[in-house]
Length: 149
Image (cartoon, rainbow, N blue to C red):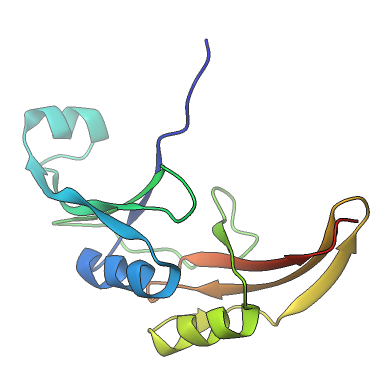
């Protein structure tokens, strides 16, 4: 059966702060309405008793897909997230100016995970990239491409 990509979800400690970070740093745009959802249907769907979520979708730059930023009224402790933690690892944004994007991440409450690096990928081009983290520790790869291989 054919499928179509819809969105990526991130669970935040403070959904408003995290949404603002993605708006300011990467140009994501709010997609109304804000969500405030609870009920038996949500408990059954998530498997979380007394689930109550608040948040919103943000339109990702360059396409119609969204980043869904939600917070639950009660959450478990967050494990430490590293680049090699099993599961979804990071999201990536292509930028025109890697150094500026890195500075924007840091000045908006994010942090560096690693250093800016460069690698040539045959038949594709030269990639400059850095792993950074948003204010809640979710890993983001920022990329700058040049050439065509």
